[in-house]
Image (spheres, one colour):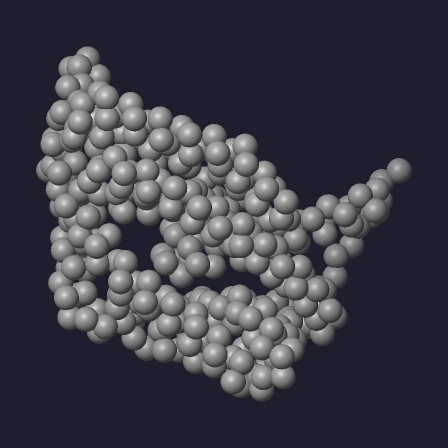
Length: 349
């Protein structure tokens, strides 16, 4: 038996659809501002546990928020000021000598892709552009603290954007329910409770993932740095930082980063040093796989590594540095939403 399906479109439906389209268009026009506001919310949420710790010890919330901002942004400033100049110098030097390192490998001509890698890196526009950028950063840091501010402002899209993010995030952190109030403001009343609950769960997941990932990266980076330093390998700090960043790819990240270190070791000390460097990365990888990763990462309820990688790539492609910064929180919210949707679907089945 056929069922007759009737669809009625009322004037109210048309008006609602027009308002939704208008809102989407305005949001698209103000997308840069929206990104900055969301970034401020993420920063305020990230430091909320620290603010809560001071508040529980009878510190006024304004003073607690101010202390956290001084600690966080002071640490970032000090880290960039003291560690970035040698890392940038090593990166510029390493990039300019990569073709020489590849030439020492004596790659057979039958491997045409690898055999031409040195010539490509020596003449490619991308490599030359990256080298020029690194040199410009070196010159910026030579001006002292203003170079650090300039670098941070570049990541956020300018001095105004950097200041706006700091002010907005401080405003959200200053009020105990600052983020909650913002969500209530932008969400329809019937979805307020769910939106708040979803964000709280996602915020916890983000915190657990960040704790495990930062601790894992620091441990592996320090181990690699000490090992390469003992061997006397050049660019030890740069290679260790690269390894720590590559740890975002679980289990295999350190081995992928080790390929560059092995090339440097082979170029400096022949097969013997290359094998020793390879052995260091294998030992660190086994230590990570069998001890650090199970104890730190698997015991926290975090975000699937594959989802993190896809989110980082998508965020960087869509919105640059801010997209990368917001990609993991967005992935956490999406993961929680899909989990709720799956539970609801199974409950109704």
